[in-house]
Length: 87
Image 1 (spheres, one colour):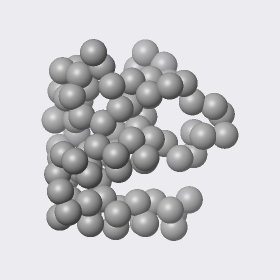
Image 2 (cartoon, one colour):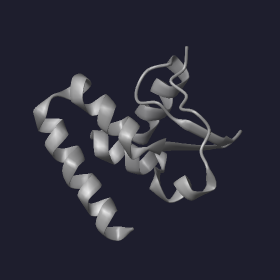
Image 3 (cartoon, one colour):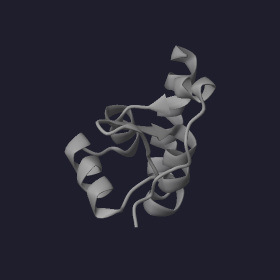
């Protein structure tokens, strides 16, 4: 079963990450994240349309904790801080 998040309300779209941003947070190549989506692995994602996929930062954070441990958590926290400042 795929890790698809519940639908997104319009006011939430600013908090969504592109696949590239999510891959950077996880220290992965974007194609790896795409493959994981198709395999039902990785963080939960949101399909905004048949060709548009986004990730909630909270879903990426939740995935980072148990999957990668403290070194990747620190990297993800730093990336989220940068995204928060840019918003």
